[in-house]
Length: 567
Image (cartoon, rainbow, N blue to C red):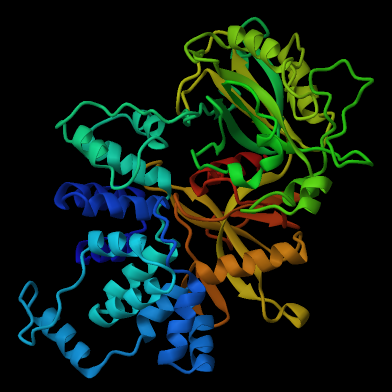
């Protein structure tokens, strides 16, 4: 257990992405099976301990500590596992053993105490335990562990790591450790199970690459580069196709041999949040597209279709506010499903039946996509149509006046481009609409006033600057409106759960490339400012929407704002 506890401590205290990658790669190299496999599952969120729930841990604390005092402590710390780890009352003999172990690392206790449990022992026993037995096991282990070990144990059983490591970053660490391509690991991932013995054997060249028998696996997504002025001359209709950049959630809808899964662009399985789309994934294949909320029909709550339209995108898209109702939910009520039905606006076809189409040119994949979608439920699937243009000036006019408010710009794709993982330079460009919308990362939060005095409602946000391999956040503005009361509650909980430092009424929030909350910020203008470290000042900034779905490393850079400054 101690190697895992030490890893968590170091990951929490290491802000650098490269530093975190090295810590995990070194851990995988030093720790044997199955310990490292259980640790990996815990970090990626693939370890489900059913015998212990947060409410049971609160009940344990009620037996050891005054409930009111614990409540104050929890409010101050903001994290259940950390609070319990810090305040868990140690018996005198336990405190003595911990002091002796700290003074003589690796030495056995002279008092005949039980040794610390291993990670494998904890996972194995908890998986076999009932909900009556689970809390008793945790209580016994808490008495045997020091504060660091208690913290690791509680993070393990609650499943809420919050250590600044995404599932994808852990997979990148595996790729670094085994000197493999991360795309290979991502395609295997959903067919693997903890503690990943066959995966580690392959990474260490002790066995062949595992063969994934899982149906409907994730395929690593292809991403675009921002279109910049030097690239304008490359864009012509013979070389590039243009289509609208819809502002929903980029997803991959995979269905195979009766298995249906919906993945985010980072490979997270989000199927449970969108059952109304899964019900209609009656095909064998893989679609890449944008998940959007449709305007509901007056009766029945189905997506409304414009029957007078002969366009490929004939499902009527709802508003930004409608989309917010479906984000950041693990389960969805029948009322929400009826009022805010979702559909998929398809961009690409990656697999048709058992045929992998990713190596084909984009033009051919789109032809196959058009034929594929005609066989699907028309109220749940349509196609993002091409935008006709003859000159680059045509695109400038179209971008300035899109036909729908849920369009944020244009996508430009080479007709001859295969579908390749990552963000290659040249095949695909994104050209966001002007002006004045950026994606920033929440950095600080302050308590509000009046009816908001008990909520953290004033937010400071920043963008990335510095080298690509060691980026830093620099504050660029503050906002305290633009969100609903329900979003305020979600933000307040996020801030309490992710606080790293306190400065009076202000909290510093965890904000790292692989861990942070992205906020889409709208503003009326930008000016140069010598008073701000960033050198820019925003006019009337406000929260446009919360990007729970967007990784922090995809937020904008300072150069993006500098390019908006008037000459």
